Image 1 (spheres, one colour):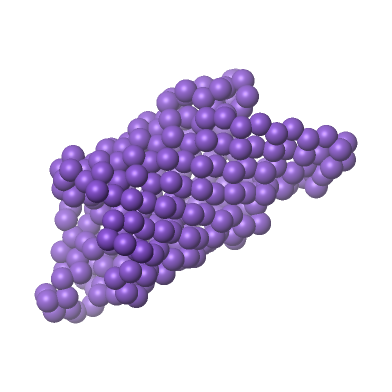
Image 2 (cartoon, rainbow, N blue to C red):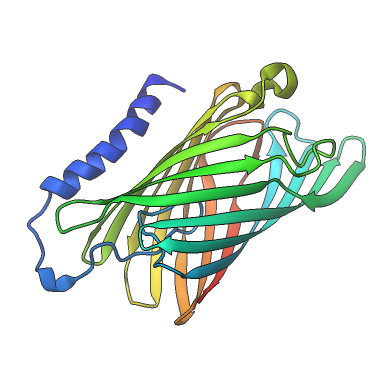
Length: 281
């Protein structure tokens, strides 16, 4: 990762904290908006919100990618991932969850006319998230979280790297009336070594960030940035946009699409659609 990129990853949470503390004049306390935003955004950005105690949340996440090879135009890869999340609010400031993906994959070589398609379970991930600073009129909300990826999927078929990976993350969120800013840096520790995994054994730095316009209580447009710097694998930056809709009091629908603005990796998609369907009780 280049020096300026490291600088951005470190600086952005500090800037968000400083702007929140020393920014514009305090709105009237009657606004009552502090800390009121969804637990996560359209694509990958998580916010500093935590679920209330004893709340169960189940989310179905789907995404599809038509990937092109950077150096071989004859190679195509299609990946559709469907994931189920189950989350629980242990307290108002601490929650846990589990994620189980299922992957459909197809690879085609137009040069030889060959193709291969298969599907299977991906690796299971466990996570925990806790609030360390509650948002106020001046201060942002801050949470810390961690993910543990367990290598339960079939390594021989390429659905797992066969290693335990650990992700450490932080969420910084601040709302001003009908706008809220969310910054989510992460560091991913890969369990394997290069002699086994190649370049993908490198750790990676991730930065997700987004802006929510709280247009109405039921409809929230969003824009998002997602980037990573993955050692010898390369780096990728994408921007996305979409909406969050609450059709009922205990359901939500998120629709979004991302497109790369910088790509230095072997496989990339011109655009990626996302859908997230959630229910809670």
